[in-house]
Image (cartoon, rainbow, N blue to C red):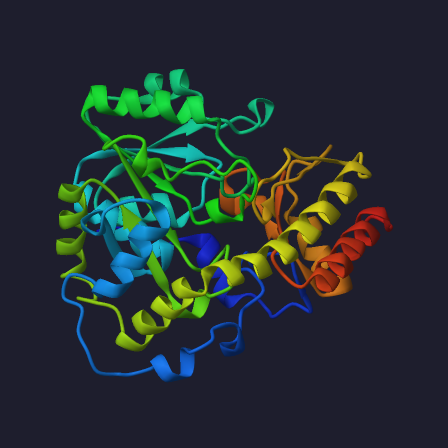
Length: 360
């Protein structure tokens, strides 16, 4: 029996609470004051057997699809799991990007799939190399898993790479699940959801990373109507439907999403500019530019950045996520969705630790 485990998520939930958190990747949280009408919308009555219709319609309008292409879930991780459950059978093979967000391959393994990986290389800016993907496919491959923007690097795949990947998947009769939870943090030149490019794609996302509404646990998939129905049937086996207060508040959030997005943009752009300038002044770190609220610096001359992350926390109370959780221990993931003053203080702490005396 496969043991259910995602080491990064376990670490994220059980680690000591930091004074400055550059490891957790949620956007600085909204409050009820950011959602006009939220208090009046709360009601525990109601049902949503196939999804709460006002929420399905709000998501569909936002992303330019039909409501029968939308299925809801408990956050983006829940959407990823339900999509995998709908598309995989025990013994199927799944091809997963590397570096990876470890709950994605863990979900496939839990469902009895066999996992292979393909590289998204630092030297290529973490773009998706379709030839590398094609070389890793086998007759047993049923699903490809990737993220865009890429988690952990925040890099955005080139549109032509995704189009070529969709064509390859359609030719092979397989699907591509694209975790797009950071896509709405791309403000200029944002691509359309992958699910709008080809029926081979399934897009997942949530209100968490780009909007600061993690506690609503509002996640969704966008897919071909037939795939969306299969995902809803998978949800029948998990939690049936979402809590009605959450769905009702999520509808209010979508009604106010433009103002929430403007708030997010102020936070994210200030932090992204600060992190970019800081990285440019650190010759001991190499990093592909991020389009999201995460970056994945490589600590030069170091095989494992975990001791540095531990030293940083012990000396300054600042947390970063060790790269070993993403398959690349010489890196660490730096998250910058928090308050700009906290992010600035965290960067200062990272510099002080890098510049300080090495441990004896």
